[in-house]
Amino acid sequence: MKPIYISIVFIIVILAQLGIPLKMIYDSEDTLMTGTVYKFKTQPIDPTDPFRGKYITLNFEMNSFDTLDSSYVYGDKIRVYIENDSNGFAVAKEISKEPLKINADYVMAKVVNNYNGKVVFELAFNRFYMKETKAYDAERAYLETNRDEIEDNVYALVYVKEGRSVLENVIIAGIPIQEYVE
Image (cartoon, rainbow, N blue to C red; front, top):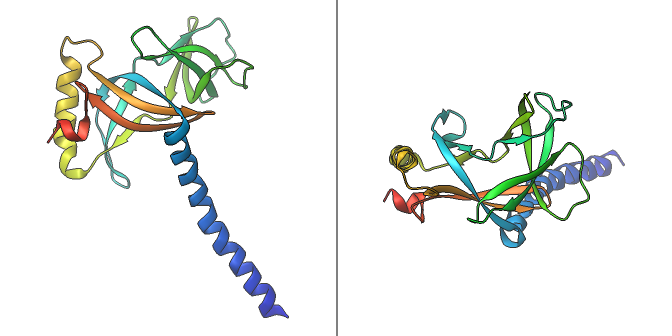
């Protein structure tokens, strides 16, 4: 009788180990297929993570919201409700710790500061991973292009659905960054 229970537990563990990553993949793919795409203006920084590889850290122009609510403190997880501005870029419409009953997409963020009527936050999708061989060239192109005087020349394409967000690509001068560096 014991071998049957051990076999059942073993099968459940295997299914859980396969099911959880598959659900995460499904959620990301569903967001890419049926989510709404937003463009987020960026500013550059480029570190390396020894465990996950080379990436570009994206600093977004949309990183704060004016509010007199002083209850937001460092580390709070918040929802940043967004909409497109007249140029097609994402802007913060409202922030909240709890879901709001408004018909708008939102992205998750973490509060990093609340000072003088402004809540500063960090968006969850602030790393764009690159192939090691293209990362240095991408970093240089990213930095140089962000320094030029052309407005809206560098941005991130992010798909958003029900609070989930997937960073699809970084665009430089209208071209995906991987193609731009080739």
